[in-house]
Length: 466
Ligand code: UGA
Image (cartoon, rainbow, N blue to C red; front, top):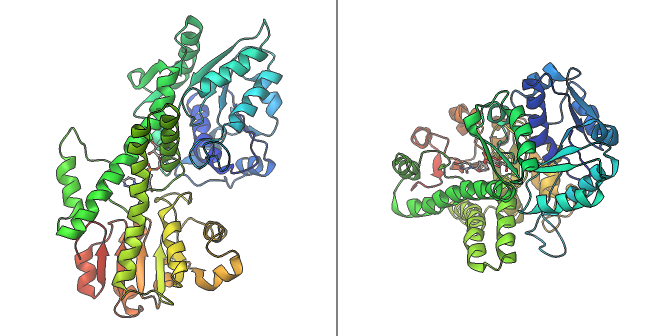
C-alpha cells in the first residue's frame, strides 16, 4: 500500500509512484496492491476512465489490473493493517522556510506517514522508503517505528529509490536498467531485502537487482540524478562556446559520445533541464554537503544548477538581441510548455522562465502545448513577482490550440519543448502567416535549420553559430 499524507501537490506522488504500483500489480497477479491517498477526488480519478496523469501505456496496465489485484482507496488505516509490505511514497518538497529553506527536503510527510504506520499496525511490516529523501532518513523512520513497536510486532526498513523518467515511466518500469534495494546488513534486514527482491524478480532479471546498505541506496538516488543533470549542464556550457566559435554542439556531442567511456546518451544540449527532480535533488545534495561541513563539495554540485539558470537567461538574451534589442509588444509564439515531451508536467519547466522573461519585457506571448492545460499555464506564470493576477496576465499571454494558431502573425517562434509534432510542421504555411522577418529560435535542436532558412526563416539554434 502507498501511504500519502499531504493535501498539497499530490501530483508528484501520482506521476512517479502510481505507475510503479500499477506495474507491480500487473506483473504479480498473486499480490494485492492497494494505493491509498487521502484526497478523494484523486482516488476517484484513479478509479475512473480518465486517470489523473498522462503517461504512455499507463491506461492499459491500470485497466488490466484494477479491481483484480490493484485497488485505489482513501481507507488508509485499513490498507496499512492489511499490508505486509508498505511503500512510503509521500511528497518531499523543498523547504520554503526555516532551516535549509530553498535547499533541504521537507520530511514532515515522511514522518507523519511513518507515525501513522506505527500507530495502526497490528502485525509486522516491511516498510519501504520510496520517496527521494536525503541520506539517513531511513534511520529516522526506523527510530520512530522501533520506539512505537510492541513486542509482537517488528518493522524492517528498506530503501528502494525510483529511477523511472516521466514520459517513459511504464517502459522504464517494465525494463529497468537496475532495481536498487538498500537494507540494514543484519540477518533480519537481509531477509526483508530478499522479500522485496522476490517481487521484482517476477519480471526483472536478478542480475539487474542490486542490494546495498541503506545509506548507499539513499545516496545513489541523489547521485544518479546529480550525475545526469551534470552531463546536461556540461553540454550546455559547451553549447555557449559553440555559438561563439562556429563549432556545432550536435557534432561535438556525437564525437564525444562515441567514446564508449563517455557514451552517447543525455548529451542533448537544450534551453535547460526542468522537471521535479534534478534541481531539487541537487539542492538536497548541496545541503547535505554543507551539513557535513564540505563546502567545496556543495559549491561543486551547486554549479550544475547555476549553469542551468545561466543557459535559460542566455537563450532569452539571444532572442531579445536578435529581435533588434526589444520585444516590447512583439508577438512571440512559444511552442511547448512541458519540461520535456510526452508529459503534461510543467514543474521547473524552462518554458516558465522564458515566458516570464518575455512578459517582463512586455512581449505578447502565445503558447501552445499538446498536453498542458490552460489552467496550468496560467498558474505557472502567475506566481507573485511577475504579474500578480491572472487578468493582467491574460492581456499578455494567450493559449493556442495548435502550433499554426500560435504562430499566426508572430514575429518569432520559440521552441521550448521537443514534442515530435514540431519536427514535422508545415513550416512553409507557418512562414506565410508570420510577420517578416520571421525568426525561429530552437531551444531543443529539433528543426532542420538549413531547410527553414531556405524557406526564408532567420534561424537560431542553441549550440550552433547563426
Ligand atoms: C529524471 C531521471 O532521468 C530519472 O532517472 C529519475 O528517476 C527521475 O528524474 C526522478 O528522480 O524521479 P525526469 O525528470 O522525469 O527523470 O526526466 P529526464 O528525462 O531526466 O529529463 C529531465 C530534463 O532534462 C528535461 O527537461 C529534459 O528535456 C532535459 N534533458 C534531458 C536535456 O536537456 N538533455 C538531455 O540530453 C536529456
